[in-house]
Length: 335
Ligand code: NDP
Image (cartoon, rainbow, N blue to C red; front, side):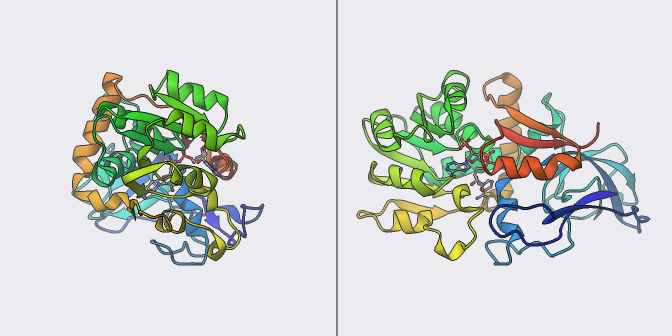
């Protein structure tokens, strides 16, 4: 079983030797256990803060342990009545080729075939998609005619936020890095506009794209983007704080100006709060089915970037934190 483990806690950007490949045999199953072979591994921004020593909303990864992560895998051996060989599931396996789980483990879901590619259940029809959908609908509470802004617009969370807000009748403005992503967000995903925050004219470009101000800002990135948005928020605006990836590689997290500082300092304050997708765990099956159905019918568009094999996972992950990915970043492990 090959795995990528945390060898040393990264200081700032991940360096060679921080995350290393390790190989050990797969042990025999005990009664009640299930062996799952990883097919697709999901790379997600939240994995970077979990490599730090500080306790955030989740415990840090222990030194020597595999990097956390969800994957799509196939059951290859089962000593549990709950699973049969051949079942395909989403499971928090970590970055490894095989994982063993108890047959009654939580957060493991059998995939029901809805005619979409399996890896979609790690992207727009998976955890990031549910994050975008639930955060927008239940915290952002968009109304028809309002202006909704979302950054990291071409990624899986932003993709779902924007397309869902369009379905709700909103004006939707994306923010993304580079002309190619911006063109895709408007022409393929159907946003009304998309601002390239790297073009050097963020304040003016955003103001021009939001002539009626901003009613909902779905916070994915923080930093300069959040500051530009803060100037344009309307009274009564809602800011679901989903994450702030611009700070994830910061060497000193205590010095980061977070979205809580930026939006909490405004007068009037927008309604802003951090949320975790697991708040709506009871809706997991329902929202997954809804998003997969939209993918199957072509209503929900998305893109993905695939790295091949565990050997390329670390580089792909480092790239994703800097926007080298175009859409959902995946690692293909096996067929
Ligand atoms: P993405 O696939 O969109 O990848 C991250 C993107 O962030 C990059 O592609 C890049 O896009 C953008 N980015 C990186 N640095 C900066 C910067 N300095 N300023 C602006 N943008 C930057 O990620 P996801 O869709 O998977 O996740 C989006 C957010 O949602 C993250 O903050 C993540 O932590 C959060 N999240 C939160 C969850 C929750 O339960 N609260 C659950 C899942 C995700 P570009 O090239 O366009 O800049």
